Length: 205
Image 1 (cartoon, rainbow, N blue to C red):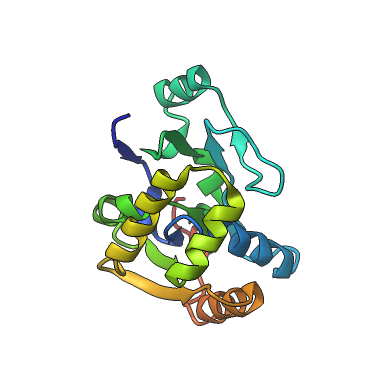
Image 2: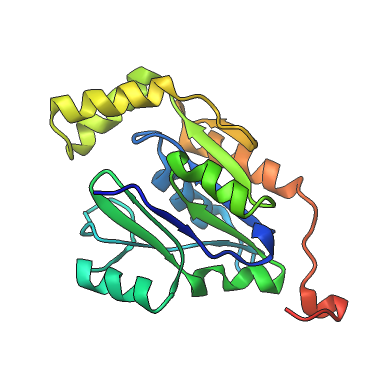
């Protein structure tokens, strides 16, 4: 499978938080914990991904789309972000980024390998790297049981060979309790400037 990445993000990505990290770092768990911790109507939206991989019990609650449906979404330009990795196709529907125009923040669970491309196209986007100790990654991958031993070894090798990408705004260590990682993310988010809706400024959205 090719390694394509498509970007169609408004306003140079202002308000977009792009979460990335190796398999086993706990990105899905972190975002799930954030959903549970955020109060109603918080100005932070966690985008739902569209994947060609089936939904698995206890895994990410993504939108499962067939290969042909993914082709259709691309043809009709309904995806703001699209990438292919690890034998799977991923997309973020444009409607998932609509809160950006309302002055809210949007969190996307993305791919570390495509951060440089996204940041070049959307320089105002903020990157967040989630990582964990190699031993913790190995244990989580083994429990997940998606890959055989050889594939898991390749994932671990890649995870340890790549550091924080240039332009990354925050690095989170998720080796310990998920609450600690989520609290640090929220503390960082609360430190960011408040976004003002374009309509409040009398500007076109």
